[in-house]
Structures are given as C-alpha cells and as structure tokens.
Amino acid sequence: MLGVLLAVACGLVQAQEKRDPTAAERELRKVRAELQEIARERRRLEGQRGDAATRLRRADEQLGRSARELAETEAALQRETQVLAELEQRRDRLRADQDQARERLAALLRASYTLGGKAPLKLLLAQDRAADAQRALAYHRYAQREHARQVQALSASLDELQTVEEGIAQRRAELEALRAAQQEKIAALKRDRGQRAALLSELDTRYQDRQEREKALGQDAKSLEQLLKNLRAAAARAAAEKRAAEQKAREQARRTQATPREGSKPRGPVAATTPPPKVGGLGWPASGDLLARFGGKLPDGRSSSGVLIGAAAGAPVTAVADGTVVFSEWMTGYGLILIIDHGNGYMSLYAHNDALLRDVGDRVRKGDPVARVGSSGGHGRPALYFELRRDGKPVDPSAWLQRR
Image 1 (cartoon, rainbow, N blue to C red):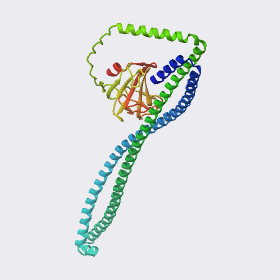
Image 2: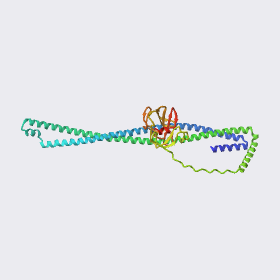
Image 3: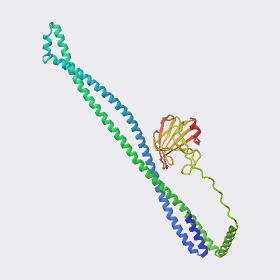
C-alpha cells in the first residue's frame, strides 16, 4: 500500500514538472487496466472463498457426526463389556455345572461297573423276596435313565459353552474393529478439515489483499483524473505553484533546523506478559484459559459478547443449567453451535465445537455433556466461545456462572 502511494506521488510530481498531460493519460490507462484485472481476480476469489467456506462447513459437520458416532461407540463398548462380563460369569457357572455332572456320572459308572454287565439279573437273584427284587430293578432302571439324561445334559452344556465363547470372541472383535475404524476416520477428517481451514485462511488473505489493492488503485485513478483536469485547466499556474511550494519547503526546513529537537521521553519498564487466567468448576461450561472476557477483544479483533475459553480439543462442554436444546448444527462464524433455552428469558450458546452430542428438543441437566471443544468454523485454535443471553441480549456471564 505504501509503495502504491509513493508511486502515485512520484507520478504526480513528474507530471507536474513536465507539464505533459499525455504522460498522465498513459498512467491513468495503466491504472484502469490494472484495476479491471484486480476486480476480476477479486470476484474469482469471492467464488473460491464461498466454495471453501461451504467445504469447511461440510468438513466440520462430518467431523462432528463422526465424533458423536465415536462417543456412541465408546458407550456401546462399555455396555457390551458389561454384557461380556455377564457371559463370562455364565461360562464359569456352566463349567461348574459340568464338573458336578462329571462327578455324578463317575459315580454312576462306578456303580455299573460294580454290578457288571448283567446288572438286572444279579439284582433279581440277590434278593430273598420278590418285592425287594422288583424295587431293586426299579432303582436300577432309574439309575440308567439318570445316567443317560446327565450324559445328554453334559453334551448340551458343552455345546452351549462353545457357542457362548465364540459369541464373546466375535463381539469383542467387532467392537474393537469398529472403534479403530472410527478413530482412523476422525483422524482423516481432522487432517482434511485442517487443510480446508488453511485454504480458506489463504483465500481470505488474498481476497483482502486484492480488495485493498483495488481500493488503492481506485484512489490512484481518481488522483490521476484530477491531475489531468488540473494540467489542462491550470497549466499557466503550474510554475508559480511549484515556486511557492519550493519556498514554503525552504521556510519549513529553516524552521525545523532552528527548533531544538526535544529529547524522547524515557520509556517505562515493559510489563511482563502474564498468562491468561484459568477458569472452570462451579457452573462454567468448560475448564481452561480465559482468552477473552465479556466486552473484551477476540483474537480476530471483534468485540466479545461472551467469553472465550481455550481448552484441549475434544474436552467436554457441559450445560450451565437445566434446559432444552433449541439449536444444534453448523452456523457461519460459529461453526458447530448448540443453544439451550433455560427459561425465564435466559439462553446459553456454545460455539466452535468439534462435536455436538445433543439434538434439538433434548432435555439436559446442569453438568450434562452437550458438545466437545474444537475449532470448527475456521477458528484458529481449540476453544469454546460461550454466550449468555437474556431476552435476546448478551449479558456478562461471569458472575452468573460463579454463583451457580
């Protein structure tokens, strides 16, 4: 920008000294041509910025969905772990039942071995009375049936045990594979999101540069047009104005040399940079560094209508009070944002998340996790932007949070 102004100033001086309107006209045509080219470039960058912002939004939303799916998988894994523990207890009980069945079976086999291969005849001949013989034969038949039943039960329990153990191994493998796949997917999405955010930042920088350049060239064109007008209308006064300017410059130089220079005031000691204060606990939605207070300046220079809390990516974001979720999706300037209505005109806003864990209509209690800290929406570092509004107007949340 400074170079452009210096070039224009030199062009003005040379044109005035030479009193050559054609030189100014050539300079004006050159500036206008560059201005048109810059305007075309700016419009092209506008389209690219829009596309990049749309892709960044999609990446943020996809990352939010994947992070939520991972959280749900982790919860399912915990539930399945409990189920697996119950199955293992069942397996242990089956093994104990098998041991008991083996002991009973061994006793029956020992009894059969003692009687030999013709057990019914031996029992009949060994009794003095017919009634006792009939009773002994009945007992023997019962023992044989029980022997057969226990053999069948033992086989069934062995089959069931094998099925249970196979189910345990298969379910554990499926859950571990699902968790690994989701973690890999989230890592890839984060890399993609970072690349898209970097591209959007680069396009914003280039767009601002072209916009400022276009503005400067527009001013240059106006200056050149005014120069042409002055040259054509006041060529006769150019020499007099030059002499007057030179005389004024000489007088100014004499005054400057005659006036003693004032000594510069000593600078005070440079204040040490203090780390940002820590917040958390009580009713705060997240724990971390307080990067911007209510009414302070955000990293991009805007005035803060809430508080900005720096925290690790993926850290939990909790509801500051009971309420109902009324908004849960991506919004320009805020990334993945969630809004809770607490009643009595109070609403809380949680922005720049990497994942939203609640849907519109969900009831939440104070302290319930509702999101994960992130940097969606093109935010530079992982942080939670939190606002408290009453009747639609932002209010300072600090005192309200600390007393809850």
